[in-house]
Image (cartoon, rainbow, N blue to C red; front, side, top):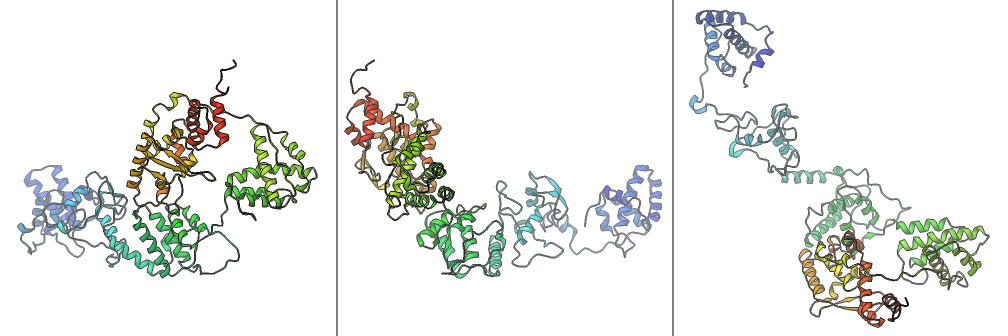
Length: 624
C-alpha cells in the first residue's frame, strides 16, 4: 500500500485506461449539476486515472480502499464510481475501525509499531541532523548515514556475520517496533563507519572463529632443526590477512601465552593490537614449533598496523628468537669499503674491522659501528694511494709514509686521519700481522679549545620552562652536578638513596663517583621517582631515567640521547655546554685540580685543563 501523488497522475496522463470514458461521462454530469469549472474537472480527471490504474489486472471494479490513497477528490470520485457502477462493494472488516485507525508499520523502517504515529521514535531520532537522499541499497529517499537508511544499516549489521542463517534471498526480514525494535549500539560522536560499533559482537567472533577453523594449515611451517640451503628474506608485501592459515595447537599456545603476558604487565589489548596481529600472522604461516627469525618480525612490522618490538622482547628471553641476518648499516658500509680496497690490503682491512668490533682472536671492547665506518672511510683513500705508489704489503709502510699521508691535511681532518691510521696499525700489530707499528707516536698539531662559560641570561628561568619533572631533573644534573648525557642515561634506580641524599655514578674503567644531592636536586629526584612508580608500577627497567618506550621494554634499554637533549635544544642549550659551564665556574673559585676530581669525578688531565682555563696566568696578574 502506498500514497499516490499528483506526480503519479502526470506519469500516466497519456495512457489508455479501460472504462475511463464511461466514468468521465458521469463526472461531466456531476460538474453540470454542481456548476463547477475546469479546475474541478482537471483534479477529478487526474484522480480518476489513478483510481482506475490501481485496479488489479483481473478485476474491473475499483475497491473503496484504493480511494483513500488518492491525493484529493476521494469522496467525489467515490460518488462518481458508484453512480457509474464501477465501485466494488466494501469488504467486511476483521478489526473494528476505531481499534486500527492509523496503526500499522512505520513508513520508513517498515517495523510494526502498533502506534498511531506514521514514523517510529527510532526513525524520528535517526533523522535529526542527517541529510536526505536515495539509499545505495534500496533506493528509497530517506535520511542517510554513509549513504544508507536506518533499516538498511540495521539489516547489514545483523547479517554481516550470518551465523544463524537469517539472511533472505531477494527480500528483507521485518521486525517489531517499539520496545522490541533493533538498535545500533553507537553514539553520534563515535559512529565510526557504516555498521557503527557492531551490535552483535558475539556473532562476529563466532563467525571469525568458524572461518578460521575451516582454513587449512600453512604449507610453509618451519620444522624444528630444519636447515636451509641459503638464506632468503621473506617478502610480506602481498600478505592477505583475510585468508590466514589455521593456527596449529602449538601456535595457539604461544599466542595465548603472549596475550597472558600482555595482561600480566597491565597493558591494554587495544594499544598492543598491532603486536598481537604481528605474532598471529607469523605463527599462522611459520608455526610455533621452530624459532622465529628476528628478521621476519622486523620485515612484517614495516607494514601498516603492525608492530614487532613487543614480539621481539617477548621471544628473546625464551631463546626461541633466531638471529637477525640483517647487518648494521654502518658495518655493512665498512665491509663494502674493505671489499673495494686493493687486493693485497683487503684481508688486512677485514681483520682490522674484526678487531674494532671485538671479534678478533683477543677480546676487546667493541667500538660503535659509526666509529668503525668512519675509521675505514678515512683510511681507504690512503691505502689506495699507497697501492698506486707500488706498496703491496703494509709491513713496508714507514713513519715517513704516514707523515706524507698526513701532510696535505690540516686541523681536525689531519687529527681524524691520524687516529684512523694509528687504529689500523695497532690492530694489525696486536694480531701479529705486521712486525712493528709505524704509526706509534705519530701526532698532529691542533688547536686546543679551552672551555668557556655561558652567559648568565641564557640560564635565567630555564628550569621553569622545562615541560616535565624528568626534563627538570636532567637539566639540574647537568647544570649543578656536571653530569654528561652518557652518565645520566646510565644512572641506576637502585643507586639513588634518598635517605642519605646520595646518587652513585658508575663509569666504565673508573671508580664509582658519589653525588651529594642539594635541596633542589633532592626534591626533583623524589618527585621523579614517585611519578615513575605512578606511571609504570610494573616496570623492571633498572635505569633511573625512563621514557614511555623504555619503561615497558623487556630488554631494559637506556633512554636515547635525544630524550635528554631534545628539551634543552628547544631552549638553545646543550648538555655538554652546561656541564662545561658548571665545572669552569667551580674552577674559578679554586685552583686545586684535586678538588675538581673529587667533586665531579674528572680525570687529572681534564681537571688541569679546567684550572688552566679558569686561571690562565696561574693566579697572578695579567701581563697586559
